[in-house]
Amino acid sequence: MKKAFAPLLLAVAAFATISLVSGADYLGLALPGGLPLGNALTAIGLCAFAGAAFALSRRGTALRIASLTALTAAVAWLPVSMWLAGNAALNFPAARGDIWLAFSLAVVACVFATLAWAGVATLLALRMRRRAG
Image (cartoon, rainbow, N blue to C red):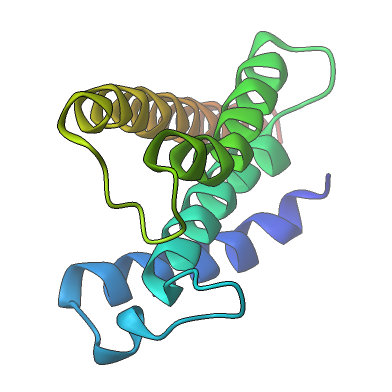
């Protein structure tokens, strides 16, 4: 994936994050099938952050494998969440809510760890190019 695509993905992720943190009024809007827009934006934000890490990674590196794993986990987050909840609104029975929270935290940690790794790797690569050039 082209590195130039990463800023677009980060902009999408920033929009989703700002919407969620600010508690925007439109988050409760129901999409077709009853899925709240906030749940969809959460999934989109996770996928965009993970996609940015993937876009910044080089083929054949451990970072590429880790970022692909994070992207896969981010894509799976919403379907697994809906399966655990048994509904699109993600209203959980008590025991399943704890499982969902642990799963969600693991996905978020994986996504942000790979994004941080990709950011550091990109900055180091830029620094090496400047020294060489």
